[in-house]
Length: 218
Image 1 (spheres, helix red, strand yellow):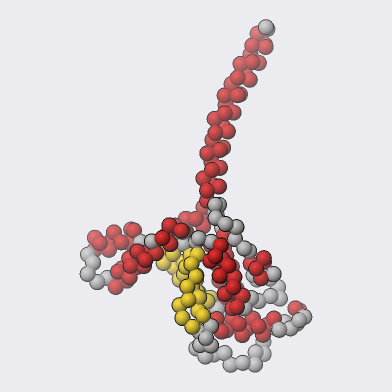
Image 2 (cartoon, rainbow, N blue to C red; image 1 turned 180 degrees about the vertical axis):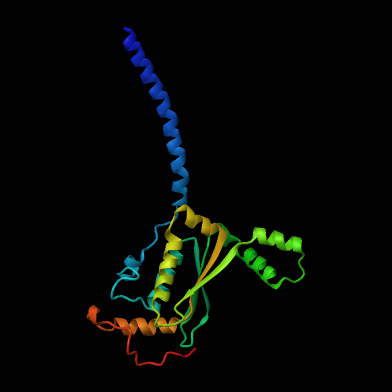
């Protein structure tokens, strides 16, 4: 065997040894990412509604919001749907509680921490600091208060979808650190405006103007 052949065999051996650790590294880097994406596939707005939220000539009404949020709550372990009351016209007022599954398991505990911190009665500064370190930020985001400002209730539906479907590291961090309360605060107005807008079979002739109903009950 020539000296050149010996050098070639040594080079092949070195390459083989270097490939094995690289494959192990790639495997270990992929496994955690797959774990993040373990939840059931989430229905998109387009699959549920037939349109993307924000699409031209389309407005989702509150009935569609109710139905879609029920689907998302059933599909995702990040979301619980609660009714917090009734609107002036008797529609159920929904609140989507969105956070990590681990936080959902301790939701009563975090609720009690928030209540104690808010009232600040009978707790020392040291206890308050401990609760602040252990508790979670509770963030209320609503939409649709002014019915004719249609972006509010449409973006709220999109926000809920993104928070229960996305698996990027920033979304996962937010879910770990935050308890999100998403609420449509004027269900009656969303139905009135969206139904009035969608009544025209010609999409290009649709308009939110001229609504012949007094909807300022609030």
